[in-house]
Image (cartoon, rainbow, N blue to C red; front, side, top):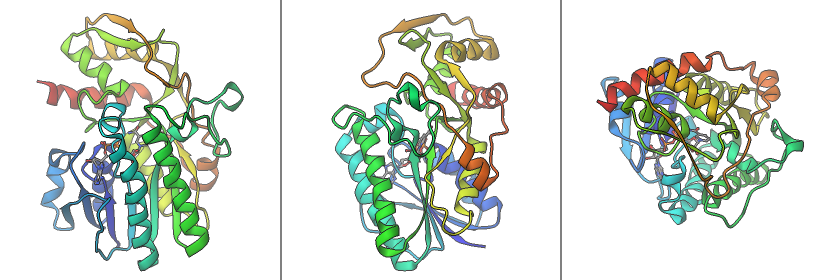
Length: 313
Ligand SMILES: NC(=O)c1ccc[n+]([C@@H]2O[C@H](COP(=O)([O-])OP(=O)(O)OC[C@H]3O[C@@H](n4cnc5c(N)ncnc54)[C@H](O)[C@@H]3O)[C@@H](O)[C@H]2O)c1
């Protein structure tokens, strides 16, 4: 089995990935600066002798010997990545360069967690989005530190691959949800669930007709591991997400029903540069990874609601 570095391993997705890799018998080194992640997310993993946590910021040099790297470190929700936009760009650029540098020195494989945000606000001709779409991103807006940061991180991966032969895998993650998401981190699923559990008003930005697709975290982690283990030469980028599309209004109504809440829905103005629609074309993941999501929205929401009921009280 392998010794695997997971950066951002104390975050929402990273904590599930660490758990899965340990379960498969690997040794896992989790590095995280705990900006949005927390030790609570990885508490149970400390009992496993194959798990090690290092508090570390990926923009600083890391001396380490591992067999594989999953590079997830980066705040993912708008309030967090906009809190210190320059730090977000540094994490994406300097942090990714550091990881690619390790991969180059050790001649190991690195998987870069990219995002559907590289597609920006897609035009109608590119809906659903496949990997050949170059995107429609505002380079100077308040989301750019994340969107453009992730785009440059992809560029770096491909330049290290072409110039230095680094073995890269680039995953473009679409909206993911599940246990260990932070309360109040501004993401729609956690917002709606927490508001519904507390009986607060459920806030929809815009008219509620903008659509998103939601992938349960176990499905995403499965796609991530499949991509890491995929055939040599397949670099991606590869979309991983759930193509079932829901409007924000449909999601809010589902959450109210599944929580049994009496919350009312209210509408507020749409934030700047918020994409109106986003849906993955997952043909490439189906073909190359034999992957497609298995967990339906209702099932995933119920598991997520159970988690938030435990942390909201
Ligand atoms: N959740 C989603 O829907 C989604 C969608 C697309 C892409 N992604 C990507 O997946 C990855 C994980 O996202 P998440 O949802 O788990 O977010 P998260 O904020 O829960 O996790 C990110 C982790 O990275 C850590 N981190 C941030 N900056 C760091 C730095 N400079 N050095 C070390 N650690 C740092 C945070 O403390 C946190 O533990 C991110 O790269 C994100 O861009 C997530």
